[in-house]
Amino acid sequence: MVSRAYTVAFQGVEARMVEVQCAVTAGLPAFSIVGLPDKAVSEARDRVRTALTSMAIALPSKRITVNLSPADLPKEGSHFDLPIALSLLAALDILPDDVVQNVVALGELSLDGSLVPVVGALPAAMAAAEQDRSLLCPAGSGAEAAWVGNTQVIAAGSLGDVVRHYTGQAPLAPAEPGEVSEPPQGRDLRDVKGQERAKRALEIAAAGRHHLMFVGTPGSGKSMLAARLPSILPPLTPAEALETSMIHSLAGLLDEGGISRARPFREPHHTASMAAIIGGGRQARPGEVSLAHNGVLFMDEFPEFPRTVLETLRQPIETGEVMIARANAHVKYPCRFMLVAAANPCKCGYLSDPARACARVPQCGEDYMGRISGPLMDRFDLRVDVPPVAFSDLDLPGGGERSADVAARVAAARALQAERFGDHPGMLVNADAEGDVLERVATPDAEGRALLTKVAERFHLSARGYHRVIRVARTIADLDGSETVGRPHIAESVSFRLASPAVA
Image 1: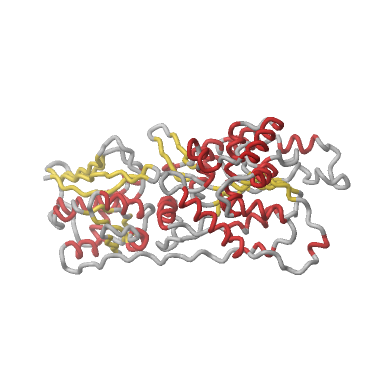
Image 2: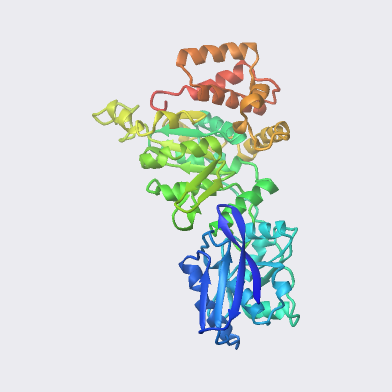
């Protein structure tokens, strides 16, 4: 007799169903696992055997074979322990076979039989719901998985609890969703003195999810401005929160199963590797671009990142997804993020200050900013010079615009875009608009078109640059509450596109 249990194998955010088959047959005593398991899965036999022994369940002196089907799909991770144990218990007639087959299980077993939380409970629960099965997981993963409301989630503390639940001795109550974390109180824009143009660029970028680059001398406030971006971003919608949390679940970043409505803000160090930024490594984990999905990826000291790392950003910026190619699998993650970069104008940092610049001006700046390729620079919608703050501005008392006021305008602009793109799947904000939709919603009036044509010819805008100008202009018009894109909106958009040579 062959007993069956079910679990999942993760390929990106997709959870593929895996059938765990167990057969106990006559022959020399052995316990083997087949079906392309990795080292962690192969070691499950020792954890399962010891956990059953701790429950006073002795394995028979027979040949035990566990097959993970489909056999050509790589199986990685310790979450296969629990489904292997379930299929074995069903084969030994300890658990009803029909009950085990109606469950998708995942969890790691300790040697004493307790269940250890594992990553990926949220996408596993969604896969279980699609199969019309319940989910069985460790107690530490139950609050996370219970956010999928159309399937029952049973969270057990130990393998003994699982046996008592499915044999009717001590039924477990379904898990409850973890408390939603409120967006943390961000730093306020009022703290930034001066830099009104940079603040305006920050507002436009937040309203339309446009990519933004700050270039300025050390201490001018680039990082300070970027750190206040979360305080003006609207919270995640329920759909965005679930989508983002699935990625964070695979990375093991969900805090006690709670799903946050705050948009991700990732700020990797410039020594980060390509696998850390794009994703990859063992089990093809998501990188920073995917962890910033629906949020912000802030890259300070942008030219200091390795050139190969910077160039790999070009495709994810355009497509909103990243493909991690491996020898035995191709894993895809979503990555619709807002890229905010900050850089000094040159190696010494004082290109525009003759009194403090090094002796290699302007070669110093050309070499330093030359680390950023033209195609990558062309993908930034807004480029802003951040000059040093005057001492007279630093002495002024705080009285600038609060983040709450700016956030209200950003939220109103985002609401207009949500209504505008409601019938266009895959388009959420102006930065996503393309093709006929972009022409319909962002084509400027006659005066605006004349100005845009003149600028495009004079400064040789690329086709990408042309479309990014009108996308930003559409966002500026939304912030002004205007239905049409006019000459003032085009003019302001172009002013952020045609920055100083240090930025451009």
